[in-house]
Image: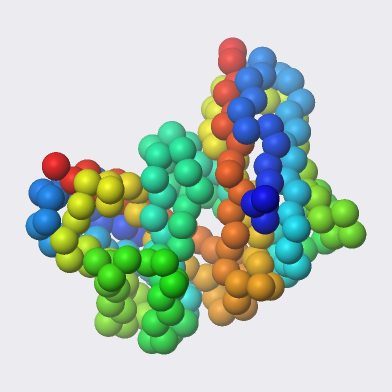
Length: 112
Length: 110
């Protein structure tokens, strides 16, 4: 089945140790999104890609970077994770325009 | 004031009850989404609406564009419906990005 896949589902990293989360999709959607969701809060958009065009939200910390090497894959890099970065990270995809977003299962990041 | 408001924030129901969750928004939108998130889980899209009403199984979603209001109804609720239900709008003022409501935490007791 076409879907949005996130790996790993659970990630533990140490304070300050770089970590990469991955997302892949088989939907051939040209828009990919990364959201951060902290406990009991709504998802917060970090950035999104229209094809290869990268769009950073104004309040996304510089500590967060993203790469999209091709249509199918997108990566979230956290250069120096702090305790406050512990959260669920959700990847989503959509076709360009006012179309439905398809979410992955999320990666829960713990920072020790 | 948040651009997307949901009510109630928390809802407990008995199995079999009819449930309504409300969403009001204050921005121009191109579409409204109802999403479901189980504890510790990812998000599943239930509906995307731009007008009228949609039905899928026991779930019904309606939207009134003039009143800037949408409702999600669950008929014959079941414990497996227990989840957080999130209203999100495609915000014309935000490049069509999603603006999320705060979610409604539903618990259905057997």
